[in-house]
Structure formats: C-alpha cells, structure tokens
Image 1 (spheres, helix red, strand yellow):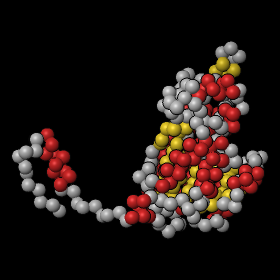
Image 2 (cartoon, one colour; image 1 turned 45 degrees about the vertical axis):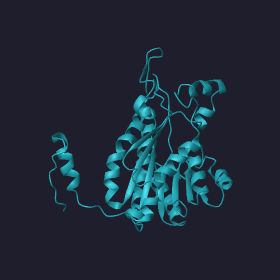
Image 3 (cartoon, helix red, strand yellow; image 1 turned 60 degrees about the vertical axis):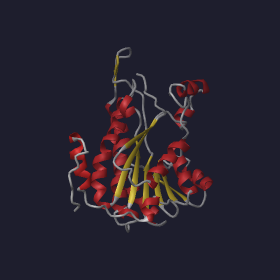
Image 4 (cartoon, rainbow, N blue to C red; image 1 turned 45 degrees about the horizontal axis):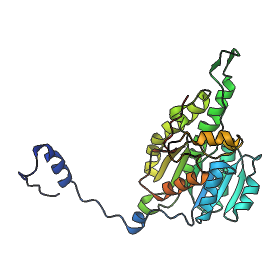
Length: 292
C-alpha cells in the first residue's frame, strides 16, 4: 500500500479523489493477448435467425473472419441455400428457438465444430396490432401477443440458457473469458409505435434482462450484450416500395438512410473482440427517435 503525504497545493475539494487514487493497490498487468482483444479466427459460433437479414449478415462476417458457424433457423427458411452460398465454414441446422430439444440439437451441432464461444440471437417476429381499435371495435388478440413474447423473449432466453451451459465448459481464454452472447432488441424497446405493444414489450424485455444475465454469467467468464437496431434493410422493410423505404431512411438524422445489415454484423464483431463490452445495450440507429 502506498504512503500518502498531504500536499497543500491540492485544493480541499480534490483531496478525497487524491487519496482514493493514490491509495489504490497496483492492478495486475494485462497480457498482450488480452490487450489486443479476442481473435475471431478459429472460434465456433451459433447464430439464430441466420438465414436472412441481420442474422445472415452476421453469419457471413463471422465466417469471413475465420469462424465456423451453425446457422439456426426455421425449416421453412432458406437456410440450406444460404449456408451453401456462405461456404464451408457454415452449417445450417433447422429448428425453432422456442423448442428446448431443437436448441440443444443446434448446440450439439456446434460442438461438432469445436468449442462454442459466440452466440448471436437474431431470431424474432413482429406484428402490428393496436391494443384496441375503436373503428373496428377490435381488441388485441391475446394469443398473438403471447406468440410474440414466446418467440422474442422466451426463444432468446431459451438459447441463452443452453448456450451458457455449454460455454461454461470451455477452457478460459484471455482474461478468463469463456464466451460471449449477443442478443437483438430494437429501438421499439424505447420508442414503440402505434400497434407495437407486443413487439415493444418483447424487445423491452430483452433490454431489461441483459444486465441481470450478464451478472449471472460473470462468474463463468461469459459476457452478455444486446444490440438495439433502428431501421435496417431487412426482408421486412425490403418488401416495402422503394419510395416508402427512402422516406423511412430520411427519418434518421445522420446518416439519412436505412441501416445495412453488414453494419449490424460489424458491431457484433466489435463486441466479440472487446472484452470491456458487457451487460449493456448499444443503440445502432443513426440517432433516430421514432414518432408515434
């Protein structure tokens, strides 16, 4: 412990700060590997919703950087076709994120490639239904609300819990890390629009569970982060007329365009490589704040 000598030149208001920092024990030096960050090459990843949109872009980037990836998506998706296009580092595994059996089967497929180190949850659904439509005297069907919660919240958590158990078995890497889990929320968690009660609630839940799950898994050396994208060029928006998509893109202050899924994938890579990113939500939205 350092010996502190009071110096008259230090203002009284700064003394507490002076004593705090000069009395701190010396921290251990990080090794060069930890300082350089995590290297993607050779890692094994699991990406849900990987056959399209944000998930597809994530699979492509991870494989391009030397990862082996299990693309987990519905049997009705174009997963097999996309996996063939991506190349040998990608394996398509059909299934439903809400099914414990399907999720454990996908993780077993990842184990065949090596030690699971990265899990990215991109699977999700959305609907646009008002809580009560007074013009049609129609209330929000409860089963539709429950379905969105089941897929987006329970499906995400289902993957997290099984992935965490598998990652905890890994030998620790730099700074004792065993894995990283990245979830996908939405700016609808903060500025849900008319008709987004179910969707906003589901994404808000993903935001809210990020920190407690990160704390749960800290002792295992597993990090947990969430990305909240704004308006991106996904299949949902891609089905809209060009005029409408241009209008939506111009709602963002800067850059005034829709996001490219590759930019989401880039942030995924950044999160994996930077160990100080943990327990937080990153908005990826060009400063947009959605109107009602």
